[in-house]
Image (cartoon, rainbow, N blue to C red; front, side, top):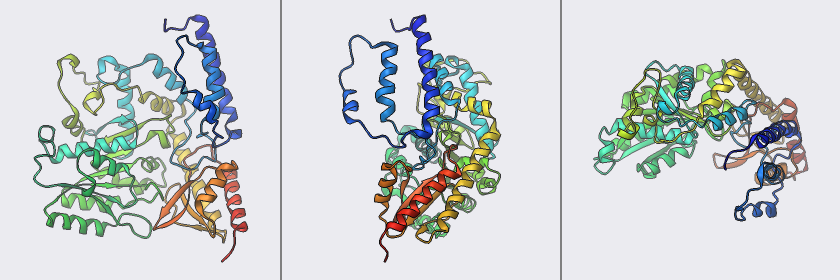
Length: 466
């Protein structure tokens, strides 16, 4: 039998609740990076038993082996990547989604889930000023959202792409993006058969933003060479420095040149929640598609991305296929998400996003975003005040890139992690190596920032001079 009996269900519930509570209390005291027990992890590779170990045995293994060898992503000084802790209701919503196990493909298998996903997508679309024709779908993350966006763009550019693919294309299609853009653009081009040779990495200005003059020059050159420009990927919140590409100017170019404009907002997009950043993101409403990551600034448990499109008909043009065994009557309240993306079987990802917005309210997320913006600027100010520390880029969002003079960045990063001060990440800008703190953690405080900068200052003081 694969069910738990009444006593086992009760015990599993007790152990799970205890796990949630104990972990929450332990976060500030846990090591950011675990001291990996390789012997214990190697033991996990032994064959699974014919006879199970039961509920008690399972939780014992989780507490004794899994948890001690897991990175404490929720730690307030985990600042290496654009990855925050889950919000407080997320684990409970995940458990409920697993319990009812809705398959979010066509609405008959998941009527409530279909409406919940529609509500989440509609709210996200509204943040960017998209109208009633807009639509979207939740994905596994921003990389998949960008892949799906370029797929929709291909179908828009090549109306017979579904039947003919790229084999019959008269001219090679070209994609343009910033030299500072995420690697997901390259991956999407490789997967879709566009090819890396047809991805143009556009130079950036002294603030690491895409140069529109260079973009236009590259487009002209490709047209003259017999290639077909078709898509620009702009990034409001680049992966290293958090710089915000000039979306309005890029949108002007796309309109003049008849190019699809995609916004990779996986890191930066949801800073639109902040009143102080809203104007910088206003031009995103002119994009044909936008990728955002609710598992970042909405703190949904991994994974939760989203693709938004200005005209939802583009999704069905790319992804809708008819099949008699999946036919169900249309309902104006429901959406068959199997026609909006490549997956058929899909989990109830929307529940954890919807639950958090219902539980905490939108204002709580606005406050969290502003809190992180404030902390990033505070860290930049502290670094700027230290003669032996050097900022490498303006702080546009929450990425703070810097160097310690006379200290090798990789060694400093390793020391910070090994001693348990913080987990920061590497940064490379303009051929120079440095360090990066990306504050996307609502648990982080000014005290945490002060502790990190004080340790950096100590390292600088111990380094040899010129």
